[in-house]
Length: 407
Image (cartoon, rainbow, N blue to C red; front, top):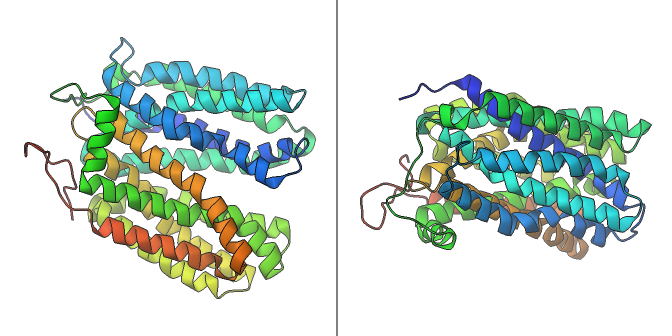
């Protein structure tokens, strides 16, 4: 068997680095570009969720299809070879728009091209990583993604002042650089430890149905959906919470959530080590309990610096959850269906991203900002309920464990 190589995981992390910097630039600056043509925040918000609607359909299908194909470049690399260069072009073209319709056209095509390679590049990690090393490997990949986000926020924010197109040019350049690194240094046919092959051909819909019929997988996916609903809603509305409820400035409120991001970045690798030593399920449960406690404390705080201190702690527990969740899903995949289960992971996280902002917005409209953190607490409590129900399980024929192998 080929020896596992952390260096290859680091090089593979350039794919996640490119994804993270692109989405960070997109989420930070695209609303400002759209705001030049559109007054309605609701319409802007809907346009900004296009990537999640595409993720509902395209990413699961691409992930499943990547399990079936087999080319001289491998199973996952062909999608990377198509998607990343095309995405580079449309990221670069976004600032070149000359009216609203060209802007929307470029952003839709960018989202479409990103959907082509996102599941395969993530699925490549478990392909080249033994099961017992996947939490550590995922921590390295997320570390690279965190670096991309920090570059987007800090460097992109400075570049925006000089030219509104510069952040997108930065993302486009780093995307193509990441593709060059992946294509030249990660050779799928050489670096994959082994391809897991299913005993029979499983179609896309059958693969998804099998995943959802498995109680262990279904409960884990519901937990994932719940904690992303709780987290993403607060992430979306914290700036308005800080300005309208606490009375802080917009810039001070916006910077505050970076305390979670930086803490997450620092503890990404340690979270993978803890997940390997303690077990993924136990580590995730510890993270959920920590975030519930942090949200309850934050709900009673009215000082921004005190909330930022809580956010530092929340970043640690968020790393415990996020670093170990995808390897947990991949571990449950039957032979030959890692791409399909990667698609399921993104399907349920995308559902959360679609549901949460309007849901929390409606709650705020009805009862105000006072209970925003309790909204997050509720959904993390639901996540705790679902993940506590994740148990070991066998295939229908009893031949292979596809549920959790740890308690």
